[in-house]
Amino acid sequence: MIILFTGNGKGKTSAAVGVAVRAAGRGKRVVFIQFMKARETGEITSLKKLGVEVYRFGRGELVDLDNPSPEDKAMAIEGMKKAREKLKEKPFLLVLDEINVATAIGLIPVDDVLKLLDEARDTHILLTGRYAVDKLINAADLVSEMKEVKHPFQKGIPAVEGIDF
Image 1 (cartoon, rainbow, N blue to C red):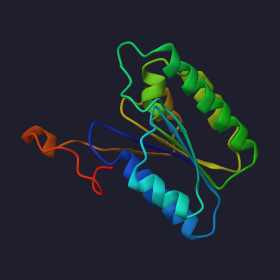
Image 2 (cartoon, rainbow, N blue to C red):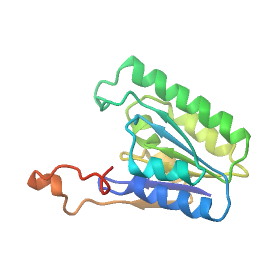
Image 3 (cartoon, rainbow, N blue to C red):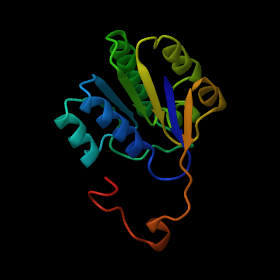
Protein backbone atom coordinates (compact mmCIF):
# COMPACT_ATOMS: atom_id res chain seq x y z
CA MET A 1 0.00 0.00 0.00
CA ILE A 2 1.15 3.53 -0.76
CA ILE A 3 0.07 6.02 1.92
CA LEU A 4 0.44 9.79 1.53
CA PHE A 5 0.01 12.46 4.22
CA THR A 6 0.02 16.06 2.95
CA GLY A 7 -1.53 19.47 3.60
CA ASN A 8 -0.63 22.71 5.33
CA GLY A 9 -1.66 21.51 8.79
CA LYS A 10 0.50 20.11 11.55
CA GLY A 11 0.63 16.36 12.06
CA LYS A 12 1.95 14.68 8.91
CA THR A 13 5.17 13.40 10.45
CA SER A 14 3.37 12.68 13.73
CA ALA A 15 0.84 10.53 11.89
CA ALA A 16 3.64 8.70 10.06
CA VAL A 17 5.35 8.07 13.40
CA GLY A 18 2.08 6.60 14.67
CA VAL A 19 1.92 4.18 11.75
CA ALA A 20 5.59 3.27 12.29
CA VAL A 21 4.97 2.64 16.00
CA ARG A 22 1.98 0.46 15.18
CA ALA A 23 4.01 -1.63 12.72
CA ALA A 24 7.00 -1.90 15.08
CA GLY A 25 4.63 -2.91 17.87
CA ARG A 26 3.52 -5.83 15.70
CA GLY A 27 7.11 -6.93 15.24
CA LYS A 28 7.38 -5.57 11.70
CA ARG A 29 10.58 -4.10 10.28
CA VAL A 30 10.29 -0.35 9.73
CA VAL A 31 12.70 2.02 7.99
CA PHE A 32 12.14 5.75 8.52
CA ILE A 33 14.01 8.13 6.19
CA GLN A 34 13.81 11.86 6.75
CA PHE A 35 14.55 14.38 4.01
CA MET A 36 15.61 17.96 4.87
CA LYS A 37 15.61 17.23 8.63
CA ALA A 38 18.48 16.68 11.03
CA ARG A 39 17.30 17.99 14.40
CA GLU A 40 16.96 15.31 17.07
CA THR A 41 13.32 15.15 18.11
CA GLY A 42 11.31 13.17 20.63
CA GLU A 43 9.64 11.08 17.97
CA ILE A 44 12.96 10.06 16.40
CA THR A 45 14.37 9.14 19.82
CA SER A 46 11.26 7.02 20.49
CA LEU A 47 11.40 5.29 17.10
CA LYS A 48 15.03 4.32 17.65
CA LYS A 49 14.15 2.87 21.07
CA LEU A 50 11.53 0.71 19.33
CA GLY A 51 14.12 -0.65 16.91
CA VAL A 52 13.02 1.41 13.91
CA GLU A 53 15.90 2.17 11.54
CA VAL A 54 16.14 5.95 11.15
CA TYR A 55 18.18 7.76 8.51
CA ARG A 56 18.31 11.55 8.22
CA PHE A 57 19.33 13.65 5.25
CA GLY A 58 19.28 17.30 6.26
CA ARG A 59 21.67 20.04 7.26
CA GLY A 60 19.90 21.00 10.47
CA GLU A 61 18.76 24.30 8.95
CA LEU A 62 15.54 25.19 7.20
CA VAL A 63 15.69 24.64 3.46
CA ASP A 64 14.98 27.72 1.36
CA LEU A 65 12.00 26.40 -0.59
CA ASP A 66 12.47 28.97 -3.35
CA ASN A 67 16.22 28.45 -3.69
CA PRO A 68 17.47 25.19 -2.12
CA SER A 69 21.23 24.88 -1.87
CA PRO A 70 23.34 22.39 -3.83
CA GLU A 71 24.05 20.73 -0.47
CA ASP A 72 20.29 20.27 0.12
CA LYS A 73 19.97 18.64 -3.30
CA ALA A 74 22.98 16.36 -2.72
CA MET A 75 21.59 15.25 0.64
CA ALA A 76 18.17 14.53 -0.88
CA ILE A 77 19.79 12.43 -3.61
CA GLU A 78 21.67 10.49 -0.90
CA GLY A 79 18.35 9.96 0.87
CA MET A 80 16.86 8.47 -2.28
CA LYS A 81 19.89 6.18 -2.65
CA LYS A 82 19.32 4.98 0.91
CA ALA A 83 15.61 4.46 0.21
CA ARG A 84 16.40 2.29 -2.84
CA GLU A 85 18.98 0.33 -0.86
CA LYS A 86 16.57 -0.30 2.02
CA LEU A 87 13.69 -1.18 -0.31
CA LYS A 88 15.78 -4.06 -1.69
CA GLU A 89 15.85 -5.46 1.86
CA LYS A 90 12.02 -5.58 1.79
CA PRO A 91 11.04 -3.97 5.11
CA PHE A 92 7.37 -4.09 6.02
CA LEU A 93 7.13 -0.27 6.03
CA LEU A 94 9.34 2.40 4.46
CA VAL A 95 8.54 5.96 5.56
CA LEU A 96 9.82 8.80 3.37
CA ASP A 97 9.28 11.83 5.59
CA GLU A 98 9.12 15.20 3.76
CA ILE A 99 9.58 13.55 0.36
CA ASN A 100 6.58 15.50 -0.95
CA VAL A 101 8.35 18.80 -0.29
CA ALA A 102 11.62 17.47 -1.71
CA THR A 103 9.89 16.63 -4.99
CA ALA A 104 7.81 19.82 -5.10
CA ILE A 105 10.90 22.06 -4.85
CA GLY A 106 12.99 20.01 -7.26
CA LEU A 107 15.45 18.32 -4.90
CA ILE A 108 14.32 14.93 -6.20
CA PRO A 109 12.63 14.25 -9.56
CA VAL A 110 9.09 12.99 -9.02
CA ASP A 111 9.74 10.24 -11.57
CA ASP A 112 12.47 8.84 -9.28
CA VAL A 113 9.93 8.56 -6.48
CA LEU A 114 7.34 6.98 -8.79
CA LYS A 115 9.92 4.40 -9.90
CA LEU A 116 10.62 3.56 -6.25
CA LEU A 117 6.88 3.14 -5.64
CA ASP A 118 6.62 0.80 -8.62
CA GLU A 119 9.40 -1.35 -7.20
CA ALA A 120 7.77 -1.63 -3.75
CA ARG A 121 5.99 -4.92 -4.24
CA ASP A 122 6.47 -6.33 -0.72
CA THR A 123 6.84 -3.06 1.18
CA HIS A 124 4.27 -0.50 2.26
CA ILE A 125 5.50 3.05 1.60
CA LEU A 126 4.38 6.15 3.47
CA LEU A 127 5.10 9.60 1.98
CA THR A 128 4.78 12.80 4.01
CA GLY A 129 5.08 16.52 3.48
CA ARG A 130 3.29 19.56 2.20
CA TYR A 131 2.88 20.28 -1.50
CA ALA A 132 2.31 16.70 -2.70
CA VAL A 133 2.30 16.75 -6.49
CA ASP A 134 -0.62 15.22 -8.38
CA LYS A 135 1.47 12.33 -9.72
CA LEU A 136 2.22 11.16 -6.16
CA ILE A 137 -1.38 11.68 -5.02
CA ASN A 138 -2.59 9.63 -7.98
CA ALA A 139 -0.08 6.86 -7.26
CA ALA A 140 -1.15 6.54 -3.61
CA ASP A 141 -3.77 4.13 -2.30
CA LEU A 142 -4.57 6.24 0.77
CA VAL A 143 -4.26 10.03 0.89
CA SER A 144 -4.95 12.17 3.96
CA GLU A 145 -4.71 15.94 3.99
CA MET A 146 -3.95 17.78 7.22
CA LYS A 147 -5.66 21.16 7.16
CA GLU A 148 -4.58 23.99 9.44
CA VAL A 149 -7.55 25.47 11.23
CA LYS A 150 -5.71 27.17 14.07
CA HIS A 151 -2.08 27.12 15.24
CA PRO A 152 -0.34 28.59 18.32
CA PHE A 153 2.32 30.21 16.09
CA GLN A 154 -0.43 32.61 14.97
CA LYS A 155 -0.43 33.98 18.55
CA GLY A 156 3.36 34.04 18.75
CA ILE A 157 3.55 30.90 20.89
CA PRO A 158 6.82 29.06 20.13
CA ALA A 159 7.20 25.32 19.53
CA VAL A 160 6.95 23.23 22.68
CA GLU A 161 9.42 20.43 23.39
CA GLY A 162 7.51 17.18 23.73
CA ILE A 163 4.58 18.48 21.69
CA ASP A 164 6.16 19.96 18.56
CA PHE A 165 9.56 18.29 18.57
